Every structure is written in C-alpha cells, then in structure tokens.
Length: 23
Image (tube, rainbow, N blue to C red; front, top):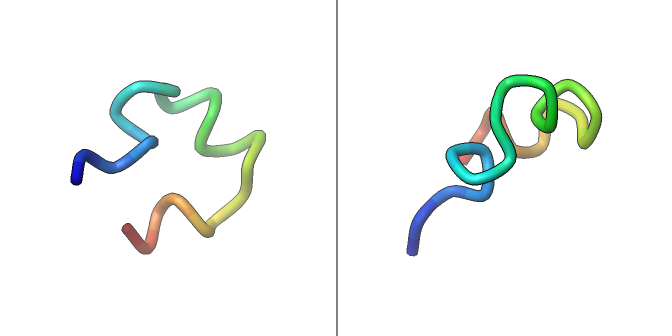
C-alpha cells in the first residue's frame, strides 16, 4: 500500500495532521 502522504503532498500532510507522517 502506498502512503496517502505521497499522493496528497506536504500540504496535505499538514492539513490531515501527523497521522500520515507516521505511515
């Protein structure tokens, strides 16, 4: 599975929170 952070991008990571950073 590919981490959503790659698709969303840095801005998306900050928007969604640290949850995506863990993955």
